[in-house]
Image (tube, rainbow, N blue to C red; front, side, top):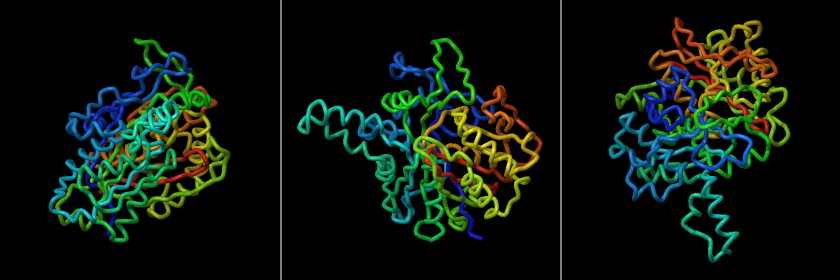
Length: 406
């Protein structure tokens, strides 16, 4: 079977810049959620997020290049540079028309959208700032990645809130299986901007926590979303192509399923039927049983609504073992953003490749009505072979992906 494999990883995250720091933070369950100091939150009900305070684009590209980009594009391009370097791809030796860039983002450059339309509203059409407009479209990060690397193959961006990056991965898989391309730079990215944070605050969706300058951040499930930001880029190839060029393989994508549910705006699917269906189909297509999954990566985001739905579906899928089930809610460490899927996938692939188990919490903690403390624990001793990543979004969409060790 010509598997789809991952050969490069690039991460810009509140947990660390670069995969080494990222993995080290993960292993310690070191949270990237902190007090926001990048913009004024004094009039808002929350002042915490998984924002990145130490990202410097000069470490990756010259000012002449990044000054034309918004924050989200800078993070995405930086992650793509790391991923390409990590994969040992020599782009000059490849047919760049057979390389694709497929991205996922929920909101794109929300900061540039705000700046552009404010200039339009305040000054009229003649006073609008035209240099801001190119960054207002969601596909700006994918376009900047393609331009930076000189890639002329398929270039597509998916926008479906929390499952945007997962959609990108599944589309990238299809491009490779159909032999349309040989290599895909696939990823997800989103930025934390004042206007986005204020919108979530106005909706009453945020975790209502405010901390002082020297206070530790202690978040609790069920009290509302904690937003984040970042970019994760993965290099995907067919196994034969990767093996032929002698690439290191981090892991394989055994299966991936996308389902759609019906629910009201701003809410998750109440019963979680489609999430359950996605999990079951993904494991069935991967040829694995629930008891062979060593890592379960859930998309819990402190909202409470999502946690309860995920717990119910895990209980139905894994049965009587739920009480002892351990899960990995990575967003509890880095916050929630629409393009987070490939950053979560990066954590899975690094864990499988290096056989380093990631910290888990008891699935019972997802019962947000209960006052379970958020206690992380590494459970060593099992060989890591399979990981399940499940994600749901507002509006009812769900995805499940099964990854396997190479």
